[in-house]
Image (tube, rainbow, N blue to C red; front, side, top):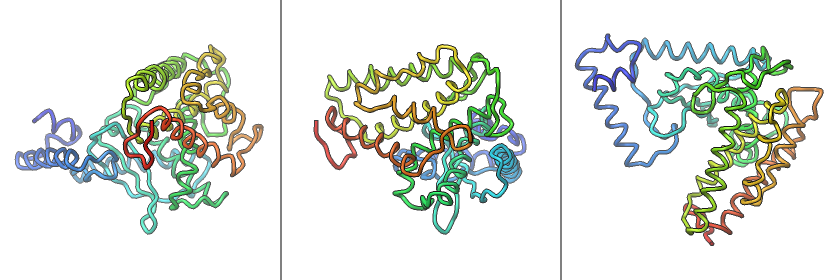
Length: 328
């Protein structure tokens, strides 16, 4: 129990009284029970973490300072405020952003992320979602509080968020920087917070995708396994993360670039034109005037088509739980 509390409160643990420790421990146990009973998968659905006031202020300042650094990186200075919610992590999600009419932007951060050495880089990913929602609302009238607009732009903003995260990790001063002599062995953080060479990070991610969405998927199909619709949506997200990282890698590194660009096994199995999506994002960029811009219709179509094709083709191969249409 002592270790558990030190894990949650590494900064001011020694200032917590015995009574406070007991109360905090009980709250954490209750959080776990609530999550197990409700089946909460998203950070926003979990109760907020109880923190000491000094710790809370320290975290708020750290995140605010990172937000200011992010705005300087993106060459903007007028991004909106956010409401910060710190949650006890019970799944894989470390952070998320949601716009709510009448409230503004809610930034959900897991307590696990606060202890990650890659916290700043992950925050850059989440802050990019705020940047994109504002940009898409202002430029293309994709309303930030509209569910249809969010669905249409989801893949775009996940790809862009990873592009921004990687550009920051590569040492760019701003998002419009054009770095030279990027070594494929430069160290970056993967999505698990592990530090690896740029190529190893990309190549390992590709291996994970192929294992899960090609090799394992073939076995699931042969076994007539039931899969969750959320698993298909998670696949789309993972592909978006990979494409975001890949487009940055191919722009600045040449080492085995053809190997990491090839996702034909996944594309063929799921009958999706993943090569076309990769090619599009490798040749279009919203920040570089030397590259083609992204028309509104393409931003929406690419994400819509990817999700539509994944769901439709999954219905042909599997029974999908949580789906309105189930067929093998």
